Image (cartoon, helix red, strand yellow):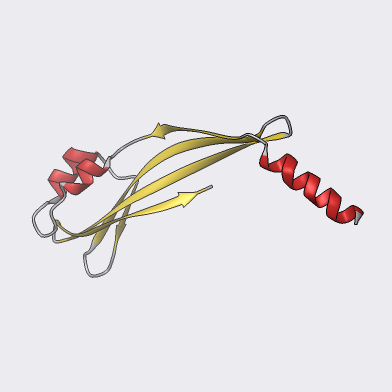
Length: 119
């Protein structure tokens, strides 16, 4: 009986709590944006266009068949604060890295993709 009463009281108290969430994202290092990536044309864009648009890659991989992959990285930080009114507050920081990989064959873009890492 006491457990049921305690459970009822806790349910009433917790449903009346105010939960707040505040989130803020800020770039740390930006090389490319989605609009620039959308302008890449598979089979038409060449190395010169990519270098002019994005600069020198962070990493350049060359394979035995002559295929190359250039990598560009964006870094950002997201800060999220979750609080329950007068009870507790949790602050979560997350660093995010997005890597744009562009594949070339004979100097022409053959593929590109974006990978996301969260820390």
